[in-house]
Length: 278
Image (cartoon, rainbow, N blue to C red; front, side, top):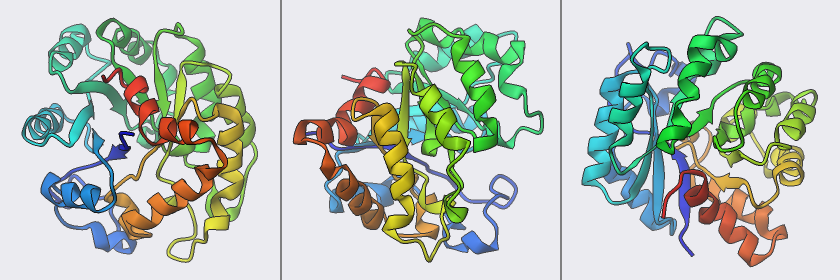
């Protein structure tokens, strides 16, 4: 079985680009690069990863692709492309020519316009991704889920979508609705996958307990099933709450309710499928 981390980041830290890393997250106010993460993967028996954009710049996307050329454990890159550009088709094509370019993401939840993802200039760019066999990662908060559902409905079933971090539910307060109902509705679309990632930083860290996550796991297990769930760490962001091995243990424990073949899908095969990797 190939075990893959579907979601992690690299960066050269600076205060201008990473202002969202506040004092409570001081543990990740430093550089995080592939050499360090390769050792983490090896220690935990993970074979490779998907590197995901953290800044919305073409410069960072090119840098991630360069890292992927240099480090075999980077199986794919979810980069940023200006999908609103009049030149979006060429920009996407330039990105897609790289053999490890697998997807595109925009940090929707930081946009001041709550309807950003429904704007024609943005959806027009997303419509082009399918032509290049690229997946689109959806990064939103629960309040964006009504628009997320409308957004997904605009596209054919050939366009693959991935919900990052189970849409960041309010784990800290134990709130399920209306996140639960919208995730169930979104999961009715078979072209949508969901990452079991980013949950620790939505909990009451560093005091979170494994049971805090159970209601949220239960919802996505029932909604998406083992066919469309993927293990992800959100390293290094996860380190503000717990070590990599701890989150991996949590996920492997909760998915033990599935058959070995289904666990293999969650731990690697679904990532290969979602990002059109061989």
